[in-house]
Image 1 (cartoon, one colour):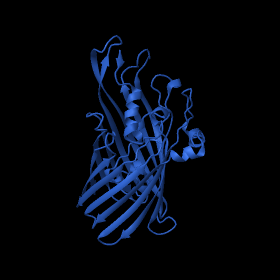
Image 2 (cartoon, helix red, strand yellow):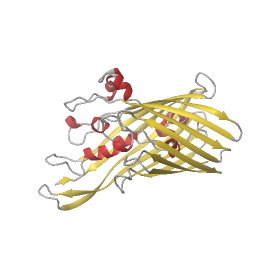
Image 3 (cartoon, helix red, strand yellow):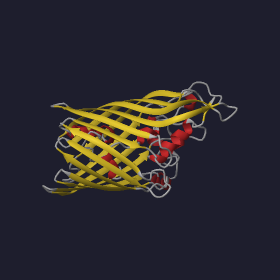
Image 4 (spheres, one colour):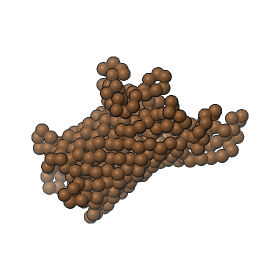
Length: 351
């Protein structure tokens, strides 16, 4: 038997809808780890690493957890790549809990559903079975202040990939695997001058994920986020924040299919192409958020991926009442692009 949609195609679908790094779909596995949770961040062009001031900091920058002094629950849902399929969806939930004198702990669950896939015989198109392909990750994080204005954090996660219950064609085994990963984040408030934040997050450090055998293992999508956030206006009723992020995929894969381990690829991924090409692989994100009296928010953003030819504009809005906040995000990527008309919704409770 064989699947009509194999693991490679699933990876392409995910890559098309999120990070769109040049050839990312063939360079790394479990690419769902690069999907950015947080509808607030989505509306700001996915530029959030130097802000990271809500429960989504578990993903964006665990250094930001150090400055969260209240409990908060966050959940988001998104129908994924609506232009390509109707049954793909992405869910993310997180919870943060401060402990006085120690720091702030966080938990998160990420789930990517690739929809129902058909199983056919090698000899013909007849559908003989169905299965649901999915990936998920469960993580535990902690952030603490190492200086009054500097937070440092770590996120530990267990990752499950369930692309197919069996191998493709003559492959033995299955398209199922487990692995683990680590994120390390730092948030520096009032960096250089007041109102300016600096953030950095090194994501998905960990062993390769193996489906069939070690020779076919895929590296995790190790990623470096660096960014800034500046409060342009900070009055009683009006607050405006400008953000900017820069992302670089730190994966080094060779023509024979082998790849460097993450601790080596952190360095070698900067030298496998000419310097000008490596610079083009850096994806730039910018965003702007306006809050009126901590009640109503408007957001706009843009990101530029020259290699992947992805240059979408994002929009968002939020409303907060008492302990509750509801956020909405929308991506306009142009006619025919798989990201076009992607809408995301999130619900946050602070207490």
